[in-house]
Amino acid sequence: MEFLRNLDRNAERWLLLTFYVMLVITMAIEVLRREIFSYSSIWGEEIVRYSFIYLAWIGAAAAVKERAHIRIDVVMHYLPPRPKALLYILGDLVMFVVAVIALYWSYETVHVSAKFGSVTDGLRISKVWFLMAVPLGFALIIWRLLQSFVRDFRSLKNGTPVFEGDTLFD
Image (tube, helix red, strand yellow):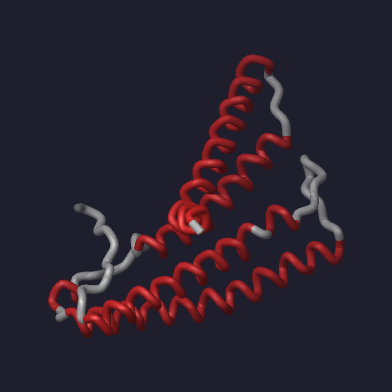
């Protein structure tokens, strides 16, 4: 049980760290190869590109979890706790609908790629592994939104202030 709690608390952090380290190391190796040996590889560029894509989508889920995504919250400062919680729930509900639709269509792309067996140009690996970044990101976003709904409804029920996340200039 402790493992699952720890995974829930830090999953995005571990994934972001893994892809970021992979991106930086590969990019450093490719720069050295290009500058010292006047040679670069297509596989290095692909690893960096796909690591960056995974970083973006996992980072989006992490932002939803921490309510750190871009938002205009001027109005929120003037609202009492109950309307503020309802407004956050409404925003999350809209984002949930968009994420479900996007998950469906992004999975459709993965399915088509798997059906036709498309592979990457340099690594010659199935594109499914790299295209899965988008549905994985939306699945994580949906999971974090469901957790946010539970947290916000609990705050609404108990009359406690809703979780607002961090602001840009704290």
